[in-house]
Each structure stands twice: as structure tokens, then as C-alpha cells.
Length: 469
Image 1: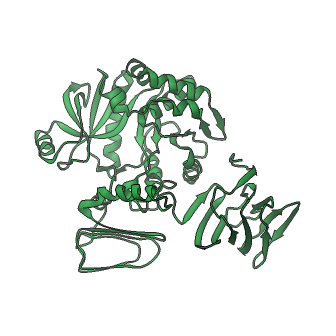
Image 2 (image 1 turned 180 degrees about the vertical axis):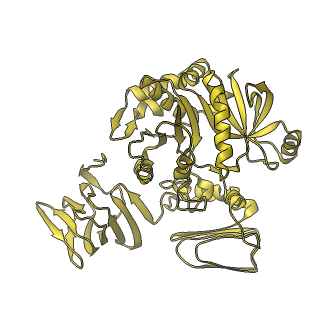
Image 3 (image 1 turned 45 degrees about the vertical axis):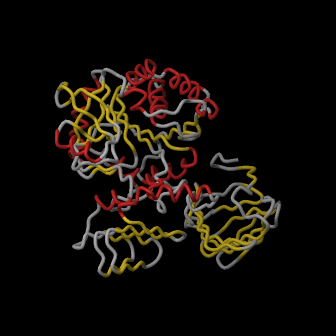
């Protein structure tokens, strides 16, 4: 039976302003329905005989990932948390070490959480082709049958036939220029490098020990010094931070003598840019992709995403327009790779628009930063039934809470009391407090903060049911 390993790290900065540090593209619904890319990745495994998937993600995304798994009925799935990103070779090593530590040696199906695959049947067929090859000790990668000459992907050169439907890997090739890419496609022997793999856990660890023992040692120490918290596996932060950073391609696949490629022709895309998303989306008669409240006049071959208000375009062609409550992107489709440079500028200038949206998700619910100014900030807070915010205090701000709907159980110093609809309460600066929803419907309230400093780091937690204290 296959053990799916879903890699859900990465920031997806080329899809800003939708994709952000605290809510990157793998957690967004970009594929045309209401499922996130992570959820779609897991859903397309239906019909295959697999074990419960294991997820690898960044520590700061743990509750976002857990909530999306919960909505799929996968509360029991294990989530392996990386304190820092160290690329794919160490991430997969952690998953492989964890698998063999459980006393088994499963075949791992390593998938990225942010890929789009349109033809699930073809995807399943490629997996069935790869399974006996991986079971025999090969390290299988999936080569995408190219639809055009693409300069944004690495390529795999096909070698001799191996088994039923596989081929040895003659070489891995870095991203080519256009002329070289055209030659690759014309030859019929080159495939896009998908970043998806299949192999036995022990075989990957053997090859990693042969070629990058330093990575394996660091990952063993990180896992040995880790702990389990609910369905989260935490590794030792210091040990993993000391681990060398490398991709599985460079660390293992380009060096091993047992690399095998299985061709995949399934409408694949890594959705690496806004133009790539336009390519794979359903278009109207003018070649436009409109999402949200959009009015287009004399507009052609354009992607428009309206998140919170109506967006109108006039006389626009080959553009990307993405509107969110706190940022708007306007870019020519030929220049969307440079969106990453905007994110870099936001970081350099100390701005927050690359970190989070106005709406921020927490394990207890979410909040929306409605307004802010000098010495004040207004939030709309939603607390899920039965959820509770941490017992905390603030050094620099006071808070007023006005309940809009539901019932709030408030701890305010040494007092605990209920606040219902149209009622309010006040939390002074320095007061230890907590907020809980004891009801069966969501609690909605407006929070007005006032003080000299209103940053999210002015929180001292004393007790927290989600392990953040």
C-alpha cells in the first residue's frame, strides 16, 4: 500500500497578493472550485489504495493545515512540522525516517500540495505504472509530457526502457533558453520535471546516506529530539536548522544509478504564476478569466480576480488584475514572474502586506482587521463553537469587545461572566483575560483596540489549549 507524503511548504510569492507568507497558495482555492490546492491534491488520491496521507508543512501553517484536513474528515492524519524550510531533500528524509520508525517500509508517493492535475484517471494510471518499479527498489520520478517549449521548468531526458512503462533517466537538465526548449520538445525525449516521486522509504534513505550523509544525520537528530503534540510531529528546531539545505534532485536523483522516469500526461501545472493560472483556467469567448464581481469592456486574454469589490476593465489585453481588501496587483502577463520582486520590496520596506491578509485564520476561528489608525485598531472576530482564545495580557493596549451574535464567556482578571448580543465589556491594559465561545453557533464580536502599540507580538500567553503558551 502507498503512503502519500504531501509537501505543503513554500510561500508562492509569485501569486501575491492572494498568496502570502501566512496563507500561501497551497491553502488557497485556485483550481476553479471551493477546495484548496492541498485539499484537491488529497482528493485526487481517491480510488487508489493508500494509507492515511502525511503532511509536511511549516510550523506557522500548522492550524491552517489541520483545519483543511479536518474539513476532509482526516483529523487523524499526521502533520510533520518544519521549524524552518530546508528544501525537499531534508523534508522527505523526515517523512521516510518517521515511516521506518513505525516499523514498516512503505512505498512513499511524494506529492507537492500546490500542483494542478486536470485528468485524474491518467494520474492514477501513471501511479499504477510506477508502483512495481518503486517496489523493486527504483527511485521513480514522474516526467510531464510537454505541451509546449517551456523555459520555466527543468527537464528530464529519457533513457532506455525499464520494466513496464518506465525509462531510465539519462540526465536532469536545468531550465533551458527558448531555442533549447524547442529542440527538447521536438526530440520527443525530454519531459518536464514535475517534482513528484515514488520509492520505498528505505531506498531513499540508503541513497541519501550514500550521497548526502550530512543531511541524513541532521534529520535523524531532529526527529529523535522531537515530540508529538496531538496529530503534530515537531522536530528539534536547533538540529533541523543546522541541516544543510538541498533539493531531492540535487541531493539524490541526479546522482543515483536507480532513477527511473514514468511519463505523465494528465493536464499538469505547478501554477507557478498568474499567467500559468490563466493558461489552465476556463476562458470566455474573448479569452478572459474573470473571478468575482468583474465587468470587462473591450477586454481580451486577461485574468481578473475580484475579492472584495467590483472591478471593471476597459480596453485591456493580456493583463492580470488581482484585487484583495488591502492590495491590488496590475501586471502584464509577460511580466508576472516579476511579482516576486514586489514581494521582496515589501519585505525590504518592512511592510506587512506580504505576510498576511486582512483576514487572518487562527485555530479558534479568525479575525478581520477592519480599520486602523493612530493608537487604534478595529477587528471583527469570529470564534468557533467550543473554542477558546489563550489566557493572555497586553502591555500596551486596552480592548473593548462588543458582541454582535452568539454568547461570549469572558475572563477579565479574577471575574468570569457572559456577554450576549448587543452587550460589551472592557479589558484594561495589563489585565489577564480570555475569550471563549460556550455556545453551539459562531461567536461574532467587534474588538476595538487602543494604545501606544498594537502589534500582534504584544501578547503574553499564560495558558493555551492549542500549545502556543
